[in-house]
Structure formats: C-alpha cells, structure tokens
Image (cartoon, rainbow over all chains, first blue to last red; front, side, top):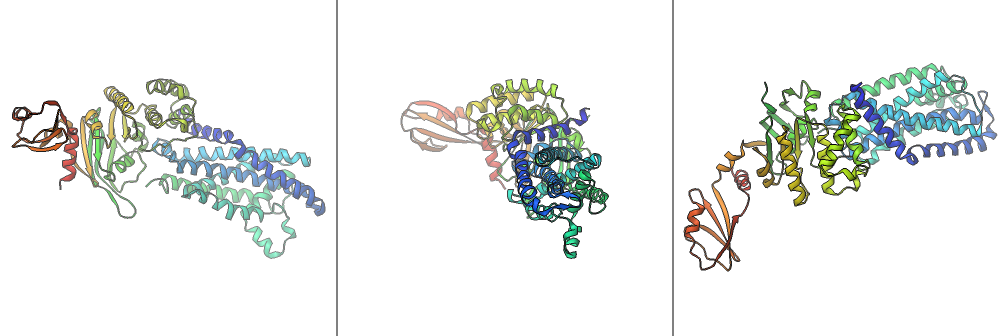
Length: 254
Length: 300
C-alpha cells in the first residue's frame, strides 16, 4: 500500500485544489451550460422541432455534457500543472523518487474527477428543463471515463509545452472550441451539405458527442463504437507522449 | 563499504546556447561531513546541485549518492537526498502543514508518520503557530525555515542547502547555523553553497571552491586557512594614529589597518607599536576564509 502513497498524495492535493476554488472550477461551467439550455434549448429549440426523434433540448444535452466533461478535465490539468511549473513547485515532484507514471496518473485522475463532477452537475441541471432517462448507462460511463482521460492527458501535454500563461489558452481557444462547435453538439450531421459532413466526420470530437448521445438516448448518427476506437487511440497516444516528455524532462529540466 | 555520501566524476554540463556551466568536475564528499561549495554567481554551484537532484540534465560524467548511480538507480539515489533550494518553490496558497504533508507523501511516508515528524519539525523550527497559515502569509525568514522543514521531513542522509540563509536576519541566521550544526552532529551529511564566507568558515569542515565550472581547490578547512599568506588587522586608537615602519599600513580616521605578510607576527607588530595614541581595540578586518577565497578567485 505504501507504494501508492505518492499517487494518492498528488491525487488528493489536486482534488483539494479544485474543491478549494469551487467558484472558479465547478460553478462557471454549470452557469454556462444553463445559458445554453435556456437560450438554445428552450427559446430557439421550440422553433427547431425534433432531430432524430429527440426534442432540440434533449438533442443538445449529450453534447453539452460532453463539452463540460472534456473542458473540466483539460482545464484542471493544464492550469494546475502549468501553475506548478510556473511557480517552480513542480521541482518538488521532479526531485522526489516519484515515477513518471505516478505523476501522469495522479494529475490525470484528478482532472477526470473534475470533468466527471461538472458533467454530472450539468446533467442534473438539464433535468430542470427537461426530464430524461439514460438509456445506456454503462456505455455512457465508459465514454465519460475515456473522454475525460484523453482530455486530461491533452491538458498535461499543453501544460508541459506552455512557457507562459497565454500558452495555456492556445489549445482550448484555437483548437478545442472550434472542434466542439463543429462537432455536432448543436446540429445533426444529416442536415449539413456534403462538404461540411466530411469536415465533421474528420473531427474526433464529433464521434465523442455521438457516443455520448448514444449513451444518453440510444440514438447515434454513426456507429457509436467508433468513439471507443478513436478515444482509445488518443488515450494511448497522449499517454505515451506525456510519458516521453516528463521522463526526458522536456521543458521541465534544463 | 562506500565511504562517500557523494561522488562526482568528470561531470560536464553545457547549456543550450553554449554556456559551459561545468567543465569536468570531480568531487568527493565523505559521509557525515559538512561540506561547503563556494563560488561566484554563475560559477556552477546550482548546476551541480541541479544535476544531483535531477533538475538539470548532465552531458557526461557520473554522480553517485551513497553509492547509488543516478544513471542506473535514480529512484534510490533520490531517496537519500533532500534539497533546500535557493528560491522559494512551494505553493503559496497551501498551508504550512499541507506543504509538509504533501512532501512526505511524495516520498511514500504514511500520514501518521508524517504527522509525528511535522509536529517535531514545526516545534524545532519555531513554526508551530503557523501550522494552518497559508505559506504566502509567512515572513521571509519563516519561509526559509519552512523550506528547511520541508527537506528535513524526509529524514535525508544527504541534505543539500543552496544559499539557506540568504535574506535572513542576523539572529535567525545564527539560530539556523546552530540547527544545522546539530543536524550534522546527528549524522546527516550536509552540502552547503553560500555566499556568506563567514557561514562556511563557521559550519564547514571541508570546502571546495568552484570557478567558471571548475573546482579550483578542495580541502579541509584547516588546510585552506593555513595557506593564508596575508592577514589584515584593524587597530582602533583614541585619536588618529601614525603608520608603523616596516608594515603595510592604512590610516582610516582613528584606526590603523595593518596587513601582516607571511613571516610577520601579531606579537611583533604589537611590540613595534610606537604610538602616542592609546590602543583601544584590535580585530580582524575580514574573516580568514574570505581572504583565502579572494586569493583563489584572483589567481590565474
């Protein structure tokens, strides 16, 4: 059991951090998504009607939950790890006999927890607007774990490469946000022209949103299992990449 | 059985941009010693410490900590060492107690054991009443003591202190020295880098001087002090004194600075004093190690 103490130390430290600043970490995504439910789901959604047998507000719930989960996981790791790097607390970890796997998993699992907690809060909030039942809970659970794992890993890579605070926002602003908005959160791929259908199909976020929608309502626009494959590939890819970066001290050691 | 806490052989480091920080240094620090590594800013002290603690990647050479080679057995080597860095590097939002608990956790120390150690360290370092205080609220001296506590919670065999008393007031510095002496007497090997040569003279039994990435001398303190060729004394009088023939003298207000070269004795100087002014006091102008150090740095 003693060999797991370093892992639980990082994990607990990270949990304490985001619970301590819950007004910055847990509350904003819930408020943000309430606005989406209200404006898009309720006000505009009534005019749109049904998509794939779902009311518009039901249709956007899976995408908004997915968006929250991956943003939460990503932001927790990127801000915490970069903060530690910037203030040089990361040296505490680097000089200690902690393995690279422990560092990666400690940060990643804490990031996943934040993503999952805010995702659950957003789902619960959505029930104020429309009552829904989760059709494939196990499928959804695996999707949530995989998606949060991948984006926590992406956050770690971003934090390692970031040299200044501005760099922390490059990936979420210029890559992640466009991918989410063009990832089928708010529309069905069937309603798009062929060119945009193709653009959507090369967007990995689309498969994730589609997978979440299958988990919530049993409805998907493509094979929902594709999401597992894509997330699995990204999970292995990011993990290996982060392992390489940390064990070689890239942008961490001189 | 290995007699060295730290063995460094042929250690080289060149930073990106071509700065040769270390040019093949060799160093052996015996177990239980209080070892001083002295050098100017940029001489290579922090780079050496960085390599030992795995914060800086070396180009070549070997480093063994209590026999554990950092290339072959890094985890075991790291378990022997704790470092007090020059700059504060703890989370300013965390409480004192949490910083210490987390540090213990990184080294696999169970919480119950960590708590016992924290209680003792906070008492020893006079931080007991700051246990629940966020570290940003501490004074500079308290932060420095927290850094020492954070290192000692690991109960290391080798303690590395990089300028531990920088920015610390005189009283606290003296208390820190006393504490470090006790630690050393309890068996912990200490590697100290400092700009305060008085600190090195007070604490260290062995001293190495590093200059432009090379160790220029490494010897026991007594041997270094024996090599002194000049000593300067300040003689205070009740009024302006006069120079003494045969001695290198400088008059500063009511004081006379006399530099004795090798062969000249203080006793002889006192008997050669032929002043109408009354002698009030006599003292060293600077600490002796400082003179050795300056001689070394000024030599080719």
